[in-house]
Image (cartoon, rainbow, N blue to C red; front, side, top):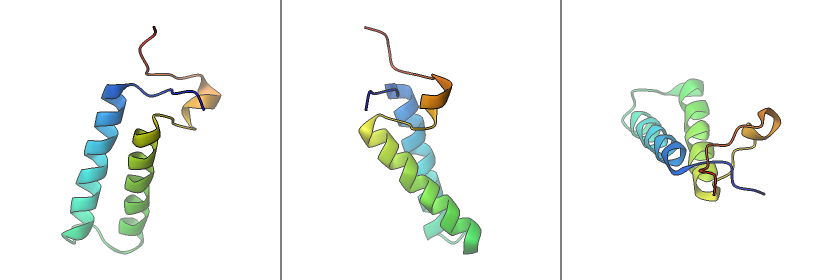
Length: 67
C-alpha cells in the first residue's frame, strides 16, 4: 500500500476519533448511532496509523507532500 495521507489529514482524523470516543464514553451519543460512530473512530485511528485511506484510492486523492 502506498501512503496517501499527509500529516495534517492524520491529525484531523485522530482529533475527530478522540472526540467521538469521549462523546461515547460520557454517554452523549449512545445506541446504534454511538456504536456506528465508535466504529468510525476506530477506522479513523487505524487509517491514521497506517497512513493509507482506501476511499482515497478510487478518486486518486493524496494528501501527502510530493517529494
